[in-house]
Length: 263
Image (cartoon, rainbow, N blue to C red; front, top):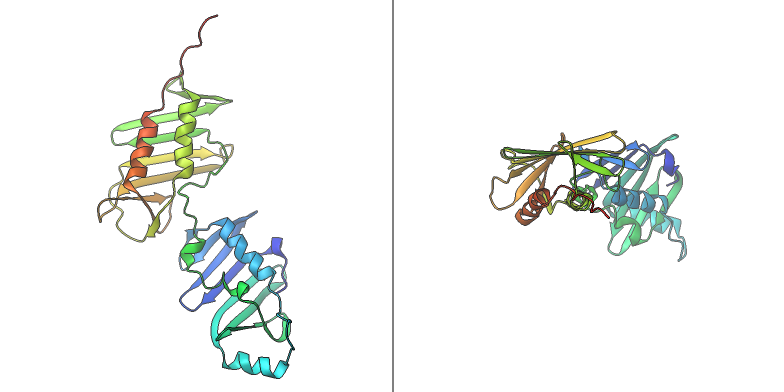
């Protein structure tokens, strides 16, 4: 399935259980468009791209074209992959019969056997390609953080290497510990419903002011855990109750910097 990797703009996978589609947002960034708009895990999506890019014909045995074509015709459809680059859309159809896998490409004439490793990434559920991290800022350093927890609002701003809040210099170690909690905030699973009234709202500005993210956290309607909503996402991220408790504690632990001792 020849294509130019850095020119890819869209990937569509039609598997046995579902169809999902990705579009390129920017350099190395992917977005899930179908079955609905969702944030993609770029590492998992890039792994899928590599599997398609490295799709090879299995020529380890004798290539009996008629026999392989007959095997493909009789085999059950497993997945169809479509990729779009600057030259248009190309299609790869995969079928399975017992332990044999067959492929037919719109870019290469004929039908060929392919190794099982190719299809391992084509039968995953769409959730396997979703970004479980609640925030996108990654290793980019935030410069503004706002936390609304009930009636309490905390605002932190960074200038140079110094964090301040209400004009007071803050202890950078405690602020960093809180940032690490935000960075590690991940879903245990996803939910389409059950989001109630938010109890915590988090706003993080990073990437030199270019990325602004807002996350709301609410108790799950089913009780026990919490659900987080990132911006305009169509679904929610389930968070364990103890994770939210530790996050709130990390906010409470942010303290003022101690005056430097005079020599």
